[in-house]
Length: 115
Length: 115
Image 1 (cartoon, rainbow over the protein chains, first blue to last red):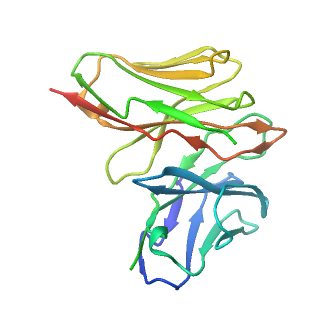
Image 2: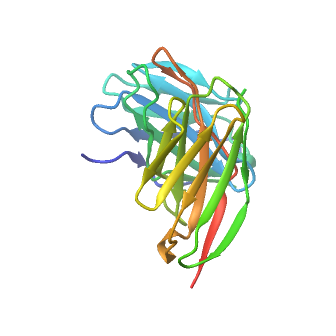
Image 3: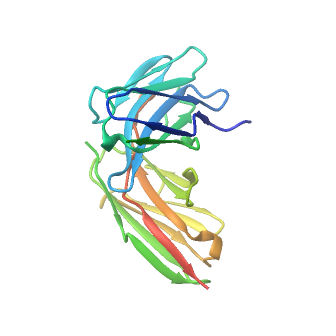
């Protein structure tokens, strides 16, 4: 099976712009979670989508949003970019539909630099 | 919300020796505890996980123990090898009725294997 893929791998934006990142989960996985990784804050949970619905959300401002499509692919959007949004954005996929916790498998990440 | 503390932040061991990384969590409802290994410039990779109904799990040179009463879990790596050098993250999450909260990560441990 192909692993989790993310596009683009690198992005450079300027303050005030917006950005959209894409994630394709492992075939058969219906849950996609997004994480922000920075040297200072580590790995932080942004939100999780399952069957096109946001099921859980972390503690990030409303500038961070996402969506999921019927094929389970997911996008996240960051509006009005700030310097502090520079980070590695990772998505992770899992089965999502069982009543026990599922393993989450990470994509390679999108490195966002805000100038 | 959940809070995960991880120690130490850096661990240097001689090749062939054992390494132990410890994590504590705050939410007694957490029921899934994965460990990830992240090499420089690469994605986090799941190396072992444990669910709350199990006290210990082993996979070759890697083992994880869980103490629910004390709310701590540990990663044990025996017979360390140079390729074990990486940053290791512990995480915790709650899964209830099919809905999975996002993973809450520790800050990471930089494991250095000295030849």
